[in-house]
Image (cartoon, rainbow, N blue to C red):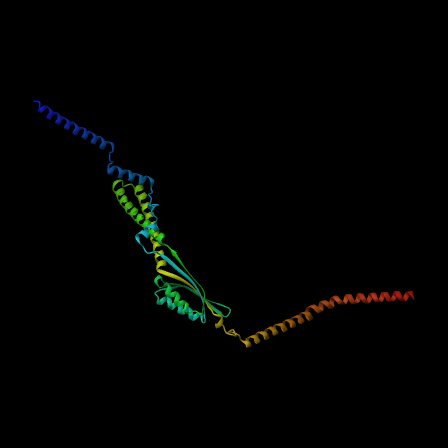
Length: 309
């Protein structure tokens, strides 16, 4: 009997400890209850329908800017390369055609071209688009056309950060669009209310517009990066100007001088005709009374002198 009591005591202690452990575990689980997914989903749908708007894109965290991500991922920098080149040549028209041929040979094109004349001299302004990998080659070949390079400058604009940011925004917007499409389907199936469907549909259209804008901007940046721009000014060189400017015609000058002389003589003849026909009769009409008055005064003065005598 003495041996059975200690064993029974041990069993009772073990059972008591196990019961206490189960009670503590139950209390800990009851203190942190988990929400049911169906309730969360219902709240999200109701808030989306009441607000009528959802944030289309989540911004990148402040601690990981776009350019840091591009550097960490080892992406190649996106540079928009431009150059301004002013050259003087012997023949402006011929050089413009050669510059166009250089752009075409490298797989580029002429974006705009203007040839204009100042006095007797011909000038040209062109904007060439060439593949970015052939940018230096195009500049070198264009400079070989010149007698003198008057001005040269190059510039590179880094758009990597903007492009990576656009990629992140596009990804978020596409995810938002997908969620809105699912939400639209759920609203049609559950509520079937026109106002609810229209609210989600308006947000879907707005997100789609933002996606198209971002894609357009990305395509524009991609084209600018792929094709560099060269603004080319072509002017005639001083040594190529003729001693006697072309277009000088002595016979034309003589004829113009003769015309001017005839115009001057014709003017004098017209003035004489106006004097004889118009001005002279008026002067005669005005002179007759004056002459008569003078004669009368002389007659009166002479009579007075005679009386005194």
